[in-house]
Image (cartoon, rainbow, N blue to C red):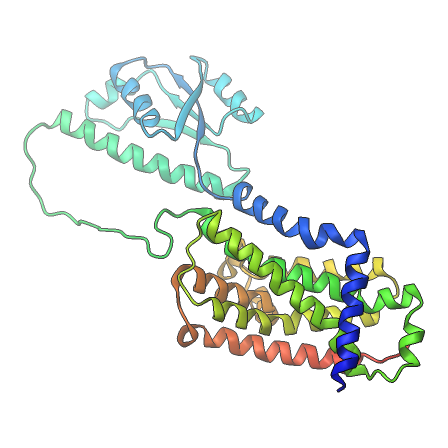
Length: 373
């Protein structure tokens, strides 16, 4: 390979890329926008649960139940009515997240030492959030039950008990930002490298400059190098910026090796650049290349474990995730960010990325030909 020819091809690609102002939003705005969206908007943290309460008992015990909810600073009673149908209507309209209905015999049953039923209706249209709300409710009801038992049976009861001392490692406060933000760093690298590389050859064909490249002494491997090196540099630069924002702005702990992150990113780029080159060789227009790119991006995103656990997927789908390079890179980047692990733990993911990247990139080189068709 001739270094001078590759250098000039790289310089030409940078000039052509930045001269087209349509590329500026993809290069500068999209990474920051997606990081902000996933950092602030997309999260599973529950800060407020709106409650509609129907208290037909109106006794000390029913007020204790209502106070137990509001004392948590998460539940907020926004609708109160004696009519149980009104709280159901509020839940149906989406004005509240929970509807609590206390029957008229609630207090008398408790004072008799009997079980008093309280109907709690939860909006299950968002299953993940509903499950978290129900977990909060169970904890509150358990604490209130112990309070009622102590009042009914005031004698001292001594017995052995299990003292579970729970400590959450790697994300002590269970913040969703610590889960999503490192993942968006990996997703942005895939998105930018795939999208820009897939249009690299097509842009030459549509601009009519492919004929000029054909009559030059530039070899196919030199043309591929000239087309991929700029996007490697852009992807790594964007990764640097996004990682800095994640650490300095969102306060995401980076406990592992930065060198390992960038080394893994370079191996990951073998797969994404290879797929981008393959799309570029089979597409006729930039619009077709872009649509084909998103055809790859959506399955990669959904089958990577970015949001949905792979273990919850059907078994046949789990087997498909093994050919998804984003799956392995997410494990690496979250492991380095949150756990601070190194090669001794992450070598299986790096090995899988190397195998996939080598196969994909080699296939793209074989498929590529310096010609118009």
